[in-house]
Image (cartoon, rainbow, N blue to C red; front, top):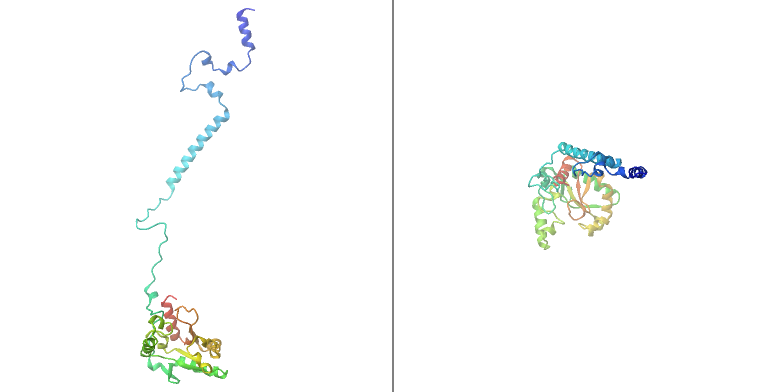
Length: 271
């Protein structure tokens, strides 16, 4: 066998693929420019890698378009005023003057009842006519049940209240803030209205104007029956005016004038 035949026989017996894995251009001794990819090189890349690369490229383009479109269509961000802190809640509107009516030491203002509207309930005490009629009926009903309700105070003028507040307060060495816990300043007492009354129990007079009055038969009867005669306790425990508890102090609310007198005063205080 000639040399050429041996060479040809060797080439034919070489394993398939080894020689063919080398690009023809390199076998010929030529160098492919670095910026050029030959068809043989491309064909050698795995098909899965090509698909993945194309997919990532398309995903990137789509995401960019979505972000750009969203930004263009979004509502512009408002620019906050330099004097407003956008992280805080706006303050509520201030109360109207109607909710800030005058009061003195937690007592509300009341107008003095006209003398012509006052009538006697006995013992030198007076109330407005509607209140007087109901109070006398209430006392009579209690008496028929064996309970003797007595009158300690009823209508008081502004002058009367001056003596009680300033005169008695000075005699007892009480500061106005302390005195106001048990007696209203002049012009701020419910007794000016002719609808308020202080009562006691004739059988237990030691409890007069004392919180122990709540233990008497008179108080227990009033608690159960006063509403029938349109009377209510003015200063119960924990009352909204923060005035000391007064189980002996009751007021008439049995007509529109008396109702407005007391409840408009409370409404004006925002109560």
